[in-house]
Image (cartoon, rainbow over all chains, first blue to last red; front, side):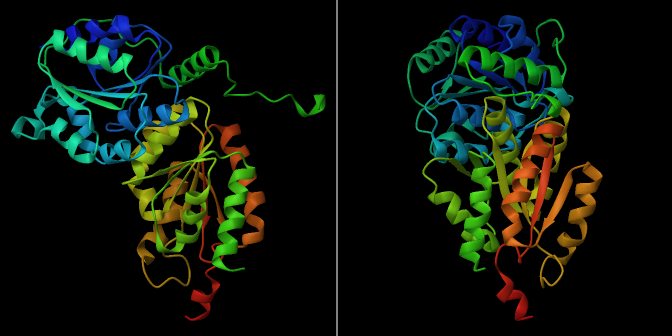
Amino acid sequence: MKRFDCLRSIAGGATDALVVTSAGAMTLEWHAVRPSDGNFRVRTLGLCSSVALGMALGLPKRRVIALDGDGSLLMNLCSLPTIARMGPKNLIHIVFDNEVYEASGNKRTATAAGTDLVEMARAAGIRRAMWADSVDEFSKVVGDALSGNELCFIGAKVTTERTEVPPYPVDEVENKYRFIRHVEKTERIEIIRTNLPASYV
Amino acid sequence: MTAEDAARTIFNGLKTAGINLIATLPDINLAQLLSEVEADPDGIHVPLCREEEGIGICSGAYLVGKKCAVIMQNGGFFNSNNAIVTTLLQYQIPLLLLIYYAGDIGDRTFSTSGSVTEPVLRALGVRYYVMREPSDAPELIKRAQVLAEDSRRPVALLLTKEVLGHRAALKSL
């Protein structure tokens, strides 16, 4: 199973979702299939699911998707019990498990030696946790999660194959501002306020 | 001021500053303050397993409009350094860090942690204030939040035993 095919299969159904991506080529692939200011790229390995949890808690009525990797989740495994404990119904945590640190020279991760991330999610207390074994099944379980109202963890074993896609169009700070303005516009809230100069007050 | 009164004063300062999501990891000296956080029916409380995830959670919540703080020991601040650099500083995200100052003057344990806390904060370029007097806490918290928002950077408040109302522990040295 190819990660790009999985991403392409869910892009159409995730139009309104805020999507947090982990380090590596997946970010570029996701942006190619769903270009949006509602995409946020995380640079700290491991923090993808934590950033997504914070968004899901802050906007409980908005769908939030974390597109995580095995190397990333393995670095921040304590995210699973924290997500389970907080139990946000609007969060879908997807992990593409290619069994290597893809952005770091394809060295093998612990999942290559048998660690099962879905079992770990379930053991942490996330009841709805499953593997998707084909692109069709992946598309279906993500579709079900999008139309449902339950915290969900979905694992997908994928190959290390990358797809040729354009570079990510923004740097970190522009990503932040565009994302915030996107949330302000779509949620009709004010997040960053610029104060009047003192002489006007 | 008792530890309970000090905790209430600090917590009310956080509320007045508009903080509405607090991520925490316990230290015995923070127990009363965390009890205040737990008892708050309005704000969101995220109990952490490791402090670095708290930096991520608060960053995500900030991006959708929350005002956040992390309450932790300085050991947790050390745990969080990569996230502070590659998320908070790199993306210019404001965040209040309330750090229990283990190994502060007069503390019998963690003196190594105490000796490197301020140098690490300085190395990161994170502005910080050492809090000693409970009655000053609300005003300092308010100003620290203004500074964090205005600079789009984290700001640290070092919580000593005195500001947490644990003077009795110091008197018995």
